[in-house]
Amino acid sequence: MTKGTAEPTLSVQLYTLRELGELDLILDAVEGAGYRNVELIGTHLDDAGGLAAKLAARGLSASSSHVSMAALREKPEAILDACHTLGFEHLFMPSVPAPERLSPAAYWQDLGLELGKLADRFATSGIRLGYHNHNWEMVEKEDGRIALDILFDAAGASPLSWEADIAWIVRGGLDPHKVVPQHKGRMAAAHVKDLAADGQNLDEAGWADVGHGVLNWTKLWQLCLDNGAGLMVVEHDKPLDPVKSVTNSFNYITRKKV
Image (cartoon, rainbow, N blue to C red; front, side, top):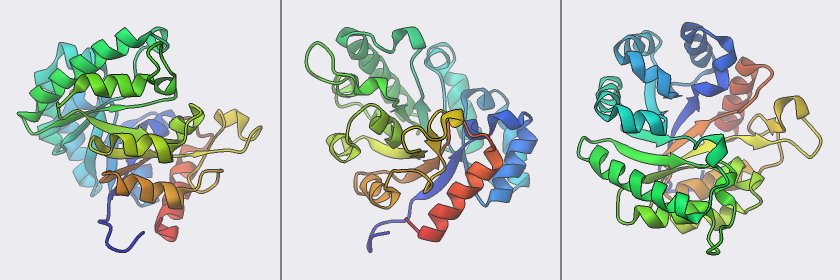
């Protein structure tokens, strides 16, 4: 950690532990690994009161949540109520449907406009809505811009934020040190995960626990903080052993104080 940089909130995306099944088992594993904050997935918001009690019983807090575009369109008030019940302010739309991921520029323009309007609406209730990227937003479109740039340009002056998934940027063939500073004003959070060396961890889709792959997370951590991330969320998309994975990542981050 560079001297003078504010300490971010460390969290873990519960999607990483989905194979454990029951939410109680997932939360027990999170607590046991040492985390005190969790990032939720959209279905967790359906019983916000019950989840709040489960978190409190373990000394955990919700830092943020993902929520689908369909839910944002269909039940925005229910989502806002859940955010308030659980006491967090950061909400991220995590992905677009698979058939739409390679859509032309006009699609990303329309999505950015819609998300910008929703971000304006949610901001009036104290919730900051943002977008989470994968690799398909790194694809250049017919106007010469990548999809991510088109989306954020269309969102204009809205408070739409960004949860930068650093490893997915790399998988998209771009350099995070170039992409991230271009959207410094929007960056609120980052997903912290690692990539295995070529040909390794194929049974984990090529992902690795943080500090056990090829990414330089000391430099990337600082890059995220320097560009506005106050929330750092550990994730592994396909761990063979979810509990071991989140524990390894936690131990690396806290030991190295990246």
